[in-house]
Image 1 (tube, rainbow, N blue to C red):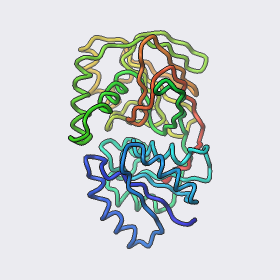
Image 2 (image 1 turned 135 degrees about the vertical axis):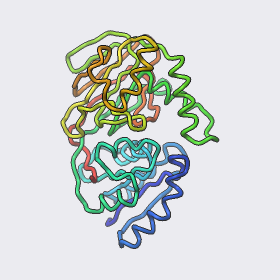
Image 3 (image 1 turned 135 degrees about the horizontal axis):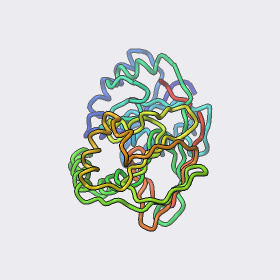
Image 4 (image 1 turned 180 degrees about the vertical axis):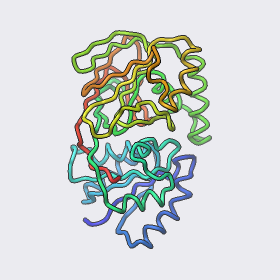
Amino acid sequence: MDGMMVIVNPIAANGRVGRKWPSVREFLEKKGVPFSFALTQYPAHAITLAAEAVEKGFRTIVAFGGDGTLNEVVNGAFRHGISSEITIGAIPGGTGSDFTRSLDMPRDPVKAFERILEGRTMRVDLGEIECFKDGKPERRYFINVAGLGFDAVVAERTNRSPKVLGGTIPYLYNLLITLLTFRSLPFKIALDSNTLELRAYLLVVANGKYFAGGMFVAPGALLDDGKFYVAIGEDMSKFEFLSLVPKVYKGAHIGHPKVRIYEAQTVEVSSDVTLFIQAEGELVGVAPARFRLHSRAVNILC
């Protein structure tokens, strides 16, 4: 089938994507681009829409929304297995849209579409998480950043919050509450053959450089180098942690005595307490978990 499928999350960024979509659609039509589109209607709907698009014969699937929308599109596109025949596009529209920062994609969606319509692609690494959800084994792909600890607790609390206020206000509220109340957690970690046991505020398994709305958490990460960039924020005082958070936006946390950096192709995590796991800002399950990297598995429009 010719053309691409554009999967649009109209409520991303408190409805900004939905408001911009008509002008983006008009741009594509004027360009004579063969495309179909579908609007998500509920959480995880993009997984179903992307899987259905592949089943219908689409081989180019573009996510227009935030990182959560992109995560769902990737999981739907590869529901029946990772395929080199499928090309994924990401148009920034959500509050974060952090994956597209690593691609240096224009933030304006029309300009971003202009860029991907040039047809340039690159092959990027894909992360796979094996964990547990509601007591059952769960598998989830991620293309940007996954994490356990502080950021995952924020995601879990936000997931439980009423959605009537949109996405940004509950996220900021839960971020503040977590900043004030969170304590470090016990981690047992295996990075390839290297094992660690420590208390930590968070563990980030990164393929891309940015997460959480522009935090430059993984300055040394490359999308196509065949390894995860792993950042661990060790146990520290509340003051140390609060003073470290703003530094992450500039990548200035690297070199801090309580921040450890590793590279690995597999990461295994367990704990004596509940460890939530987020991927692209979406709550995906709990530990014990195994993160595995598929080198250059995804064809991305860039």
